[in-house]
Image (tube, rainbow, N blue to C red; front, side):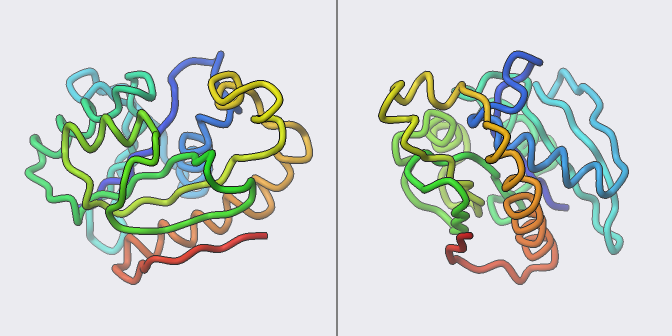
Length: 186
């Protein structure tokens, strides 16, 4: 069994914001596989279940806010008796330029409150896809307002033409066991 857990904030207010790059990516992946998310309160998450090549896969969007995603991760890990090797996290990263994608296993939280929550609840030795969201706008409006700002129309085009397809390739590499650490960019 594998779990792909995306970081983001629940609610329409946060749709298409930079902090929801993980949610946007997993939504695109779920749409391509024609699976729907169902609210699972005991896991504090919306979950889509599917089987690929005989293996159960959970796509997870925590209902907690970004800073508490570790709660949902811990509940799922405990219930299904999973290890960190079974888990892939997808999240935004303001330390990476927009359009850059980095894959690695383990690592520091780099100031991300979502990663801090995951590290506190489950540890840090999991695979993650970091989606770069940084731009000059962050320096103009500050980091807090920046991560809650929406992608502009040019950025949305890049999300759909580059970031989502590349991230989905990486998700598939995780699922087939061929994922490895590296960075890619436009």
